Length: 126
Image 1 (cartoon, one colour):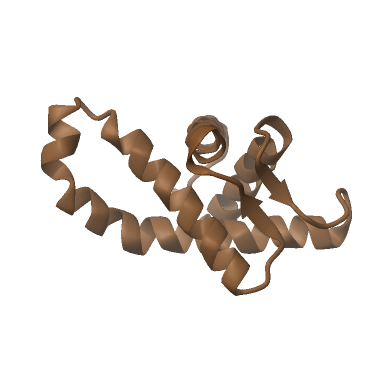
Image 2: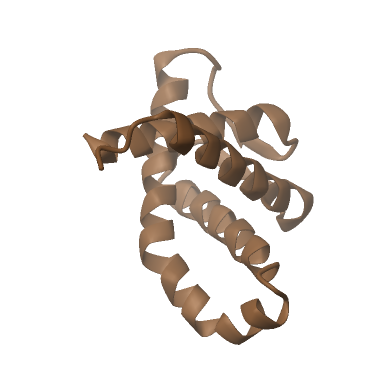
């Protein structure tokens, strides 16, 4: 149940980013079941990327993260969003992030903030 709630929260955060940030797009008719299905698939991919790749990148970039007082984490989050867009393209999922800055950078910030806010509101089962 916790996994489903987190995936739905990530899909909602992605939806906010698609609505707010130019350059992040879901290329299907908005509002339909296929639109939300795409968002759920992208949320699953984003969750897998953050669970598998992000810890490795953070470990390798630990010194840079410390030197920049954590600001390099913004770059890592944007890179994870771009990687999610690339994987989606390889799987023919109609989700696209145009470029690193401003689309992926601001999209990652918005997704992080919305996910954090939803995490405060939604129960996590602990």
